[in-house]
Image 1: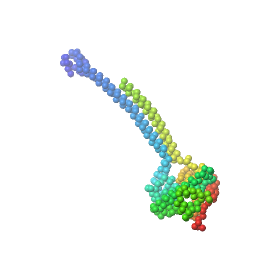
Image 2: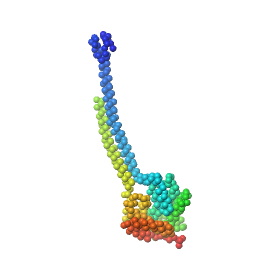
Image 3: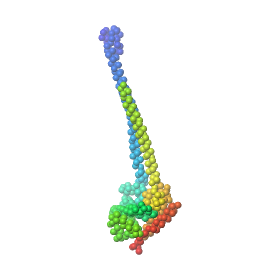
Image 4: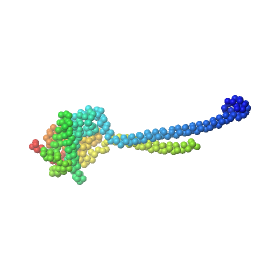
Amino acid sequence: MKCKYCGGEVGLEESVCPYCGKPNDQAVRHHREMASFRRRYAETEAAVVGKADHYARIVPRMLIILLLLITAVVTYAISENTYGYPEALRRSRAERNPQPIMETLDKCLEDRNYIAFSSWLTYHSIRCYNGPFEGYEDLQWTAEYYKDFVLAAECVFLHGELDEWEKENTGYELRRLCQNLERFLETEERALRNVETEEHREALENMSSDVMEMMRVFFGLDGEELAEFLTFSEARKTAYLEGVMQDA
Amino acid sequence: MRETGKRKPSSLLIKVLNVLTVLVLLAAIFSITKLVTELRRSFNREPYSNMEYNLQDENYGDMIREYYNRGYDVDPFQSVHEEEYRVAEYADAAFRHLFYESAGDEEQAERMKERMQSAREGTGKLSVSADDVDALLDSITVYPNKSAS
């Protein structure tokens, strides 16, 4: 650029003209503007760096907190529901390798050990609605109530001397026996309608025969007496059996 | 001025975050410890056995119930209370032997007798309980088969 006084060549950084010595106004303004730009640049840089530093200190902490929080919540939730894990594990193993379980179940049926049959299914948490054990669906619930009925009968008869509290509650096991008898008869009737194989039909008939015989052998209920007993309400059934046991 | 003004709240926030991190870390440690404990307890579910209590109470019915609830003969914890479980098995077989014998089902009665013998061998020092079961069964009134007679 040129000096406005002498027309000599003068640079933007030169505050006076090297030819005439007069002040270079543009250079002065330039210096002022540059100083202002530098100040604003420094301020902006400080703000940006400060903000970046701020986030760099906060964001990782927040991520760590979030991660730990998720870990704490998830592990706590899992730990509250561990009770069923062994059963789930057994079920998973049984479904992955059903053959040995099915062999045992068939052996139980062959031996007419329906309590063991039901216990095996329960222990391995097997539900026969679908999957490899679907073939046992028609027997599962009948066997379950058969087991409950027989176990209730064993509880009624197989105990030592009762204390006062137990004497007052003797009706409990008899009531359970009656409840399981009703449930057994309902499920057995349903199962007989849906049974798929002769072997399973025979198993159902054997269970039914055992239950009826048990009522005869231990409570003297047979034929018409048993048919009439089965029409009683649950409470009346319990009271009736209590009476039979007291007479005995 | 602006920088120092910004740093103060952020350092306070960071202190709060640090405290929170420690708290959440403690919570995570607690949860993980709880999970490990619960898993161990779940897979070693032995302490809930009532076998000994029921044996003392001569409550053989509930012993049989636990015997079957523990998978009949597969649960590894049966070995912890081996003799109690054999007493339960004996009681179950003896009750059902009495039933099948009274019902005239000789095949099943024979099967139960075999189970009784095998279970009695495992009762060890609790064989006296097997004798108690026999005495209990002797005291039960069974009704004769009218059609058979």
